[in-house]
Amino acid sequence: MIKVASYCRVSTDRDDQANSFESQQRYFKEYIARQPDWELYEVYADEGITGTSTKKRAAFNRMIADAHSRKFQLILTKEVSRFSRNILDTITYTRELKALGVGVLFMNDGISTMEPDAELRLSIMGSIAQEESRKTSTRVKWGQTRRMEQGIVFGRSLLGYDVKDGCLTINRSGAEIVRLIFYKYGVEKKGTTVIARELREAGYRTHSGNVNWSNTHIVKILKNEKYVGDLVQKKTITPDYLSHAKKYNHGEEELVAIRSHHEPIIDRELWDTVQRELKKRNRNGELGAGHSNRYVFSGKIKCGECGASFVSRKKTRKDGSLYKRWSCYTATSEGRKRIDIQGNEVGCDVGKLLREELALEILQQSLTALRMDRDQIIQNVTALAVEAIQMCEEGSIDRVDVLEYEISQLKQKKADVLDAFFSKQITKEEMQLINRRYDRELEALQKRLETAAAKECVAYETDQLRKDISQKVTEIVNGKTDSEVLYKNVLNRMVVHKDRTVEVFLNLLPQTWIFLLEDLREPQNEPSVPISVSSPFSSA
Image (cartoon, rainbow, N blue to C red; front, side, top):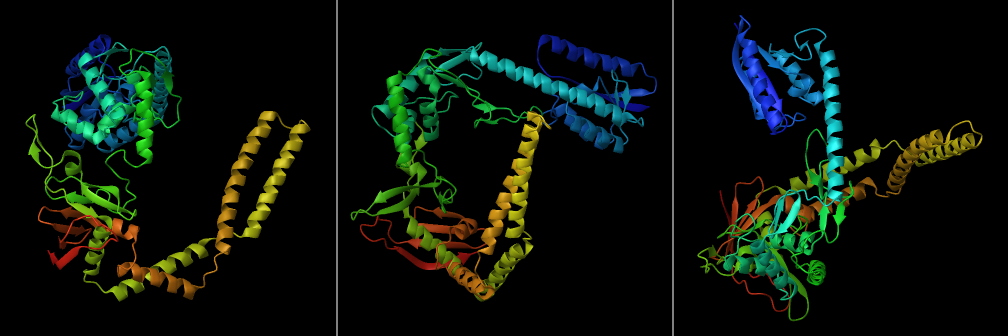
C-alpha cells in the first residue's frame, strides 16, 4: 500500500472559500479511498493563509517535515497555485520532495513531479500562478489607495477612537485620557516621563488595558494627527508581494493625507502648541529616555536593583561648564521605591548618579587590570594594520591618467550620440536610453577617479606609518586615550548596586571587576574621580 497525503489551502475566511476548503478535504479523502493500492495518511490544510510564502503555513511546513520522516510516498494537491504561488518555492520544495522519493501530483494541471518533463511544466504553471499573485497584489493596493483617498480608514482602533467599517468614532473614556495628556504636555509643560507616572498613579489604563505607561507611548500619542481630526495613511507599506513584509514608508510611496477628516478630540490650537513644544524639547535633547548607540555607555550601565538601564542627562556646574551623568531610569522617572495609591510597586532605591568621566575611569582601570602581554599585542596589531593598508594600496590597479582618458572618451561618445540624434540616425527614445547608460558609466568612473586621486596623495612612508599606528595602538592598549570604538566593543555591561559598588563585565572574559565608589555627590567645580578601588579585583 502506498501512503498518500494531500494538501489544500484557501487564502481567505469568506464563506465561499470556507465551502471550497471543506469540499477540497472531502474530495481528497474520497478520491484516495477509491484507489485500491492507496492508503490515506493525512489531509494537510491551511485556511486563510497566503500562497506566496510558506513561512506562516503551519500545515504545509508540518507536511514537509513528515516527508523527511518518510511517513508517506505521495502528495495530492488540487493545482500548482494551491501548493504555492511563489515559483521559487514550488521548484525548491518539489525538488526536495523528489530527492526524498516523495512525488507530488497536481491533479487539475495533470502534472506529476516523478515524470521527466515535470519541472518544465511546473515552471510554466508556477510562473503563471506567481504572475497572477502579482497582478492581484497590484489591484488590491490600487483599490486600497482609492478607498483611502475617499476617506475610508484602514487600521485598528486606538486610544480615544474606535474603528469600525472604515470609520473613526470617538470613544469617550479614551478621549478623556487623550485630552488630559495633551493638556499636561502643552499647557502645564510637564515632561512625558512625569505624565506617564501621573497616569499610572491615577489608575488610567492604556488602550490595551496596561496600567504601565511609558514616555515613548506618550510621545506617540502627542504626534498622532488623528487626534486633531486629520488622517494620514500609508505610513507603512508592503513593497514585496511575495514576502508580505511591512516597512515604514520613507517616501517610496505617496502618503494619503486628508485634513479635517473626522471629529477631533484636540482643537488645532492646542495641537500646534504641542507640536512646537515637541520640536523645541527635541532640539534641547530632552525628549525621550533613550540614547543612540553611538555613545559608549548607552544601554550598558544597568541598575543592580530593578534591572533598568541608566540614562544620561547633561548638567551644569556652578562655573557654567557642562558634564554628563548617568542614573537609573526607573529612579529618575518614578522616584524612590514605594507602593503607589493604586497598589503598584513602583520606583527604585538605587538612584545613584554616575558621572561620565567616572564611568570611563572605571572602564580604563578594568582594561589596565587585564593580564596580557601588552608589548606583543601592540606589535601584532601594528603589523596587521600596516599589512592591511599596504594590501589595499597594492590592490588598487586604477591609475589617474588612465581613468581621465576613459572619462574623456565617454564624454566624446555622448557628443556622438547627440550628433546621431540631430542627423536623425536614432530616435529620441534611443538617444535617451544610450545616454542613461553612458551617465551610469561616467558616474562610476568619476568615483574610481576620486578614490585613485586620494590614494596618490597619501604621503606616508612605511616606517612613518608603522610608527604612527604603533603609537596609537599603544595609547589604546594602555588606556591613555579615549577610544569609543574600543570601549563600545569591549564593554559588555556595568551594574551599579545600592551598596556603592559597580561590577564591570567585559565581552568574552570570565572575570568580574568590582569597584567601590567613595562619593557620588555631583561635582561643584573641576571634575575629579571620586573612586576608591580596594581592588579592582577579579572573581572568576
